[in-house]
Image (cartoon, rainbow, N blue to C red; front, side, top):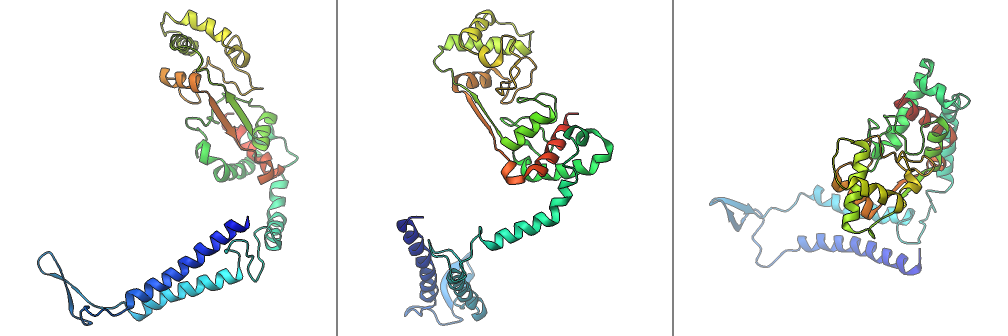
Amino acid sequence: MSTFWSTWVVVLTVGNIVACLWLIRWTMKKRSNEAATGDVTGHTWDEDLQEYNNPLPRWWLWLFYLTLAFAVIYLALYPGLGNYQGLFGWSSHGSQYTQEMQAAEAKYGPIYRQYASVSVDDLASKPEYAEARAMGERLFLTYCMQCHGSDARGSSGFPNLADKDWLWGGSADQITASIANGRQAMMPAHGHLDAASIDNLVAYVRSLSDPVTDSAGQSAGRQIFVTAGCVGCHGLDAKGNVLLGAPNLTDNTWLYGGSAATIRETITKGRHGIMPAHQELLGQDKVHLLAAYVASLSR
């Protein structure tokens, strides 16, 4: 943190504490035109509802002072004022954090490690490893449900993990690689195409998974599918490529939606999907169990 921003944080923090103290003292000050304690102030609502001039209880007032005193003591002992580290010199990455992580690893590490030598396929399918799958499910609910949902069926932009449709492949190694290393997909924008070409391309893409769709632009759209470079990722048969994360366009499974408007938006604006890597965060043994649970969802 630069000196400027450190000073800025210190001024704001200390200024707020001082302002709170001043506000308490200012509101307690007796005014010359103020009604006597216990008398009505002259404010009336709903014809006969009157306000009395009664001060706050002393114990309530002292709570405000205690919070201010706590803030001063805390900021003196711990980091909170810019670059100042506090009298204790505590850090979230210091010895306390390291000790807590080591203690957690010593306690919980063997629980995850007991399944490290069992293959993902066995963990995902065999009845005797139900406990391992339950552990993987708890990991999923902690780290993955925010995007894929608690039922793993995803939402717009986040893949459904409970079906058999895989953008990057559904083998044990491919699932493990997706979780450990993350994925980054890129659908380039094709806004350079004119409106008629995009309409034809949309018609052709929709017809791949819905042959009943009747449109005069399908034939022209197929030609554009080839010349615009779509085959480079999705293939001539439009069945996609797991090496690139390019989806199969013939199975009526849509990541962002299969309506004409959504497909048009995808073509013109492109898409950029990111699956964050979890290897460093979770470690190999947890990734192993998480991959097993994810694999079990579609099997």
